[in-house]
Image 1 (cartoon, helix red, strand yellow):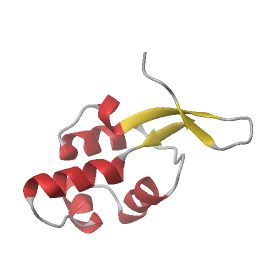
Image 2 (cartoon, one colour):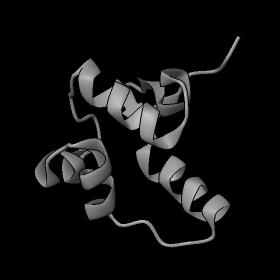
Image 3 (cartoon, helix red, strand yellow):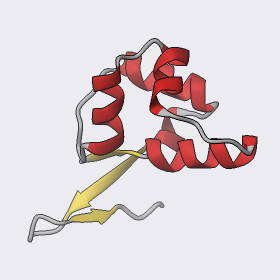
Length: 85
């Protein structure tokens, strides 16, 4: 499963800028709808398009590899982070 690290990167951006950033602000800046942003932020394993990934990367000033992480699933169905080589 691919996990979107949106919340973590948004927290880092807010910390760097020393301000609170709302999903509404992200929607306005990226042109993404509120339902899409809510799903990206709250639904594990949410499937989205490369257009959404691109817009978020531009807003968060990151690369897709910073925003996405591949997570293996254990036999019991729980996620297991894939080790970097």
